[in-house]
Every structure is written in C-alpha cells, then in structure tokens.
Image 1 (cartoon, helix red, strand yellow):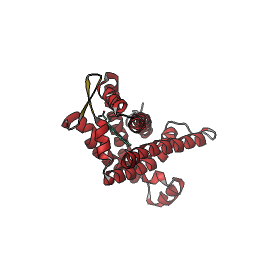
Image 2: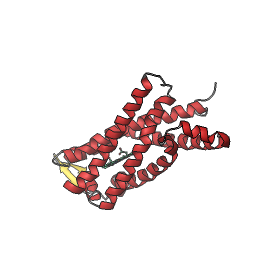
Image 3: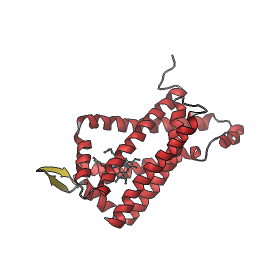
Image 4: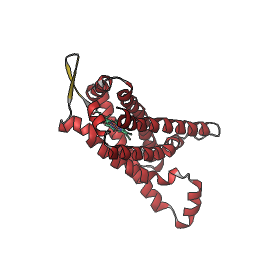
Length: 223
Ligand code: HEM
C-alpha cells in the first residue's frame, strides 16, 4: 500500500485538507476581528481573544492550526519542487496554457503570505504570549490583555495599513485558486459541481479579504 504521506496524491490530499482547515480558521479570525470595529468598546474583542488564548479546546485547535500551516507549507514547497523537476521543457508551454493565471503564482503568493504571517505574529500574537508589552483592561473585576488597543495603535500608522492591505490582496490571489484546487484534489471534479465550487471560492475570497481590509481602513480613518 503506498503511503498516504509520501505518495503524490497523498501529498496533495494532505495539503488540501490543511488548506481547507485554514479556510475555516480565517472565517473565525475575521468574525472576532470585526467585533473590534462593530462594538462600541474593545470588551467583546478582548474577551474573545482571551477565550481563544485560554480555552483548552481552542488551545488544542491552535496546535492543529500551526501544524496545519506547517503541513500546508511543507507539502506545497515539496510538490512545487517536484513539479519543476518533473516537467520536461517541451511541455512547459502547453501546461501553462491549461493553468489559470492565479495557479501559476501559488508558490510566490505563498512565500509572501509566510513573510506576512511572521510579521503579523510578531505584531500581535507573540507580543501577547511572550513579550508581555500589551496594555491591560479590567472587565467584571478580571484582567484581560487589551489587544484591541494594540491593534488600533498599529492601524493608526499609514505604512502598516498599506502593508496589510497589499498582503490581503496577495492572500486573495492565493485563495482564489487554492479554494477550488483543494476540492479538486479531494476528487470533487464534476461537470455540475465544479462551477458551483468555483463560484463559492470567489464569494468566500471576496468576503474574507474585503472583511479583513475593512478593519485597518476603518480604524485608520474612523476610530
Ligand atoms: C485586519 C486583520 C487582522 C487583525 C486585526 C488580526 C489580529 C490578530 C490578533 C490581535 C492576534 C492575536 C490573538 C491572540 O493572541 O489571542 C492574531 C493572531 C493570529 N493571526 Fe491575525 N489578524 C488579522 C488578519 C490575519 C490574517 C489575514 C491571517 C492569515 C493569513 C492571520 C493569522 C493569524 C494567526 C495564525 C494568528 C495566531 C493564532 C491565533 O491567535 O488565533 N491574521 N491576529
């Protein structure tokens, strides 16, 4: 029996499953972040971030999340290298004509998203977990990290807002192909369903990236 982790199909499958898990993470992350600009106070955002940072089930999910990121990256790089090495020069042109514009740049957009993630984690996550440079807030007699103030202070800087918006655009490029490609790798190729999955991918990408973009823009101009 060929090994699920090492066969070519197995690698694509693992990358797709990890990718779809990240698709769900982005919706949850967006919903929590939007509460910062919707609510009158930072309280719902800070409490949600606190819950996400302390709840045992979420902590286990977080380990799975980081594992998912690493798995997705590892298999992505591996498959790309395999692809470059295996593709004979004479087929290069025909293969390109069959691939969509966005699919050609998956490895490049992935590299930029990885750099974004490192900067993003340094900006917020690692500050809250390791550096302890976060202001505190008290709700109902309990102390919470005031991550809301941290986010707002960051997005009052124009260059940070531009950096985040550009990264979200690149994330959109990655998701546009990634979403439907994940379903394809899971074997969901069908005359009837493939156009539906493609449309869902576009709706998801527009909704998620527009939602993320709204946050720094709204904070910069109106908070
Ligand atoms: C305006 C948009 C965003 C804001 C305001 C934001 C804010 C935050 C904050 C405050 C944290 C720390 C939470 C904590 O320590 O409990 C965090 C963590 C994180 N963010 Fe973001 N984020 C944004 C967009 C994104 C995007 C687009 C991605 C992925 C491509 C992402 C990936 C992550 C990851 C992986 C973590 C660590 C895991 C976690 O705490 O849930 N974020 N973000």
